Length: 408
Image (cartoon, rainbow, N blue to C red; front, top):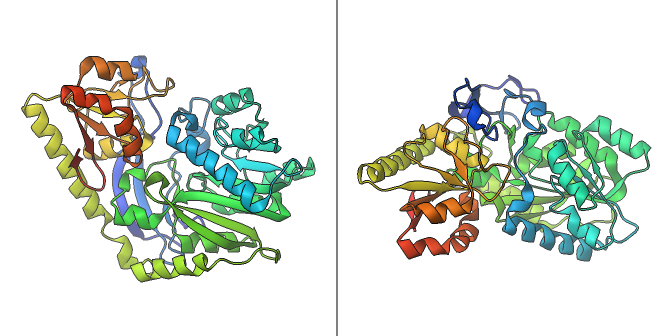
């Protein structure tokens, strides 16, 4: 396997989570007795450009199809994040009715709806037809396709160039990252702005967030490496923010290299220096996640087995992709976790891949009154514990699995 950015042969294993089904391949009841396809989940780090990456074991077209079950609008905190971002961009860059805002991986219109509400023209690009259909119902003009150089040229030929081109949590999902970035270069207006948000590799390593690794995420990104990837296509970083979403993410701001209208923020050099200070420039930094993951596995299994032996009932909340990585790496099945609750009707009535844990709506939680609720999307712990505060009435407790087992 060669690095998807610099094409160097890859030798160094970052972490091996062995084999698992694709994280969002939820099962119907009729499929429970059918064989499941497992894919390797071995992650490498490039010793030249330091891009952390998994091979494209399952093709992106097979992952992001019309059965895709992740709809962004089912997280209230994510909607608030999107609305706040919209106001920040309008205030900082003065977008108006003459601007065009384009989002790559626009999902169900969770973000573009806020620009649309302000009367600013928008265009969503989304490969999954079922989520794009929901966006269209909100009045969001949407193109159902994968983004890259080909589509960018087609859209520019139609007179569509972006004044704001954004992508939230999409960069990691792209198997051909160079084609994707070249497409952004083509699509961006001369004085336009790109913003991208993605989980920061530094947080993944330092907080044992190995459950954010799954087949949809082809790349795991440091600030240094992302800066190099965009620079290779003539795009320059002019600002960066560290934000709390997804356990610690970066929001980067980019412009055409020849655009002199935007000052380079001191935060760019500061974050590069921080990554260097943490040791991210040395291969030793990337060697201890396997051991951290194994400790989480042992601690979680110990907790679940002890509760089972004591006659306690453990349920889970949030049928998240990261939850499937965690449960499948730890070998947890439906004998240790009775059920999982999720707000999305697209997941309810289905079963988690490999573990075969059934997914119910929240009423099931109120009826069954489990002793413990394992929060799988731990990055939303505050939102979820507030939403489920009523479980305290029957003595229920919450369990956070990452970076270490915590009962609250």
